[in-house]
Image (cartoon, rainbow, N blue to C red; front, side):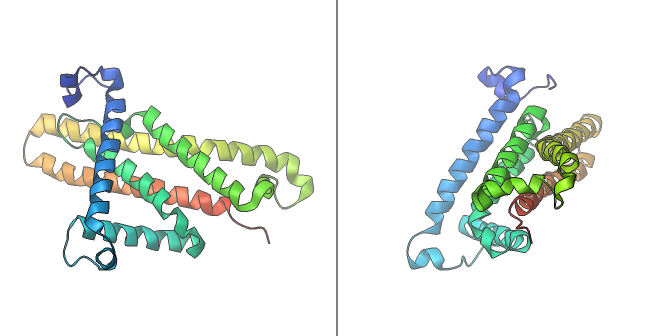
Length: 229
């Protein structure tokens, strides 16, 4: 990571650990927002009554509905119980991405260690989900449909499976590092007006990368829970 100033310098955080501090800060923000959202939801009939305007409750209702539609499109109705998982992945990534747009901050996801860790979490999650779905029969996914092709397909499937968290992490890392590098460069060159365009672009990229990562995680779960016919 670079040695540019961040607000965490004021707290005595070494530059080597800045992305760790950002990741912790993003997690704290998500926890606070989650508690506030739960309190805004209310209880009883108030909890099931739709928000009449754009409030914190309305925001979470719209997000849950959006995530519900995506999960049902990819996984079907049997994937409803996984909505909190994919919602958490999306929120964690997008919060870390957007923090990098704030002057004096950096994106934890621009660090390969953080982005790979998120990819590794997705890797563990879809394998556990696949095993819970089919038991030991889950490992048939690695053998292929024809028994005599097992010696060929097994190593290919194993390598492909273990590359997924790396590919997820590298994709997120490279895109966020490039996005925030370009934004920083134009801010240094033009200071005003022009950077606004790149802030808009950076916000769009941050949201898209979080969505792509979450969508790929859903696809991996779909592949892990696919039944052989």
